[in-house]
Amino acid sequence: MDKLRIDKWLWAARFFKTRSLARTEVDKGRVQVNGAAAKPAREIKPGDSVQWRCGPVVRTLTVLAISHQRGPAPQAALLYSETEASLMLRQLAAQQHRLAPEPALTLTQGRPTKRDRREREKLPSS
Image 1 (tube, helix red, strand yellow):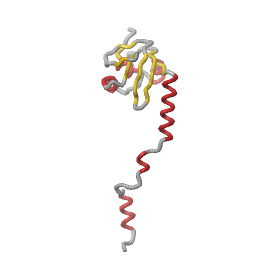
Image 2: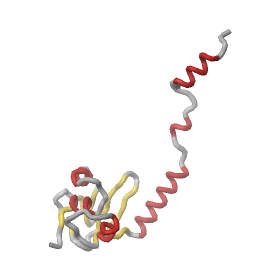
Image 3: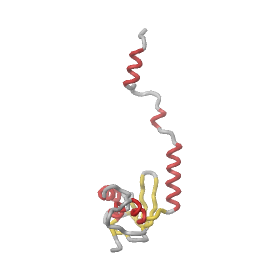
Image 4: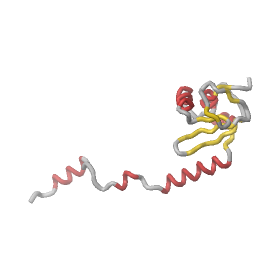
């Protein structure tokens, strides 16, 4: 067989831990095959282009092979190749994420912690 459902292929290529998670992502419209929105039952074949939105990053993959079974990671990596543009965008997004400060660290006040309360109780009252 040269064709396979997109949700099963995403699961076999180890992008998702379960097939139902892959199906949910496809149902939400985050996966496109050859530039068109895909449904979970959409069949793909070697040579198809798959775009998958994972957070702010869009990964563009080319299907190289079909596998009906989920295998080890080195074997799953042989099922697809990622385009150079997609790799560069993913690395750029990772670099921006590393350089951007965590928003929660900018908060200077809020509800005191238990440790703060105990330190306040140790202070002599005037």
